[in-house]
Image (cartoon, rainbow over all chains, first blue to last red; front, side, top):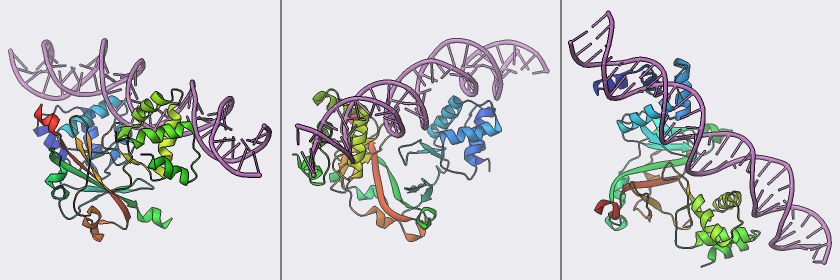
Length: 138
Length: 138
DNA sequence: TCCTACAATGGACATTGTCCAAGTCAAGCA
DNA sequence: TGCTTGACTTGGACAATGTCCATTGTAGGA
């Protein structure tokens, strides 16, 4: 479970109670939390942790490549600890639920040179939108 | 040029000076403006137009399907008047420039049923990220 | 021309995120 | 173990973007 903490320690990350708590929150199986949700869960474990620290720590985890930022809607960014397997997202238009999905094919290959306008294209994000079974049934 | 205005009128949209100005701003060839940029350009033509009206009008145009909302970065949403031809976006990671692109293939078809988790999937957004020629040359 | 429903206004408020100066502490070292 | 130091945390102010609402204005039909 604490692979994440191990990796961070191995990289010389200075370990503090605050950072440990943030990493633990993300390391659970509750994925795709907003920064505020991360903060709320962190506060439950360490009441005096500040919002600024949560933002800082999330930013560092993103820089280290341990966590992905996901901006599927106009609301808050979400943080996805599943950074080590390429995947895309499937979002419910009604309740906002997010699932990781693994489509076939390579969307990068679908962009011909004639459509690149001289850009060096290095990444692609795909967001599928629809209605989840819960919302469709209601 | 005023196809957009014509269509809106044809749909029974109540035409006001404010709405006309917003539609005209979007109908130009300067695409992918933020709400604030739209407001700034609208103010240039009609100084007393309010921010709330610009937001309202943009929201209505989106609802009518005449304009697309594009959220390519964590900053403001952008509004894309090119709503009538399906396309995706190519974004420069450095300067934020956006180009419309038309990749081959249909990304929706790349998502097998086994990866749909019971969702009714209705749309897909693809954002290519890279570095534009200007930024790469600098 | 007059009415009336719909639209615009503008300012308060909400949400999300960033910044900074001051205080605190983890970790290396003697 | 007990210092030292520089990195980390704090909390609150601030910024950017967007929403809401009561009031005022007006487009378009009768």
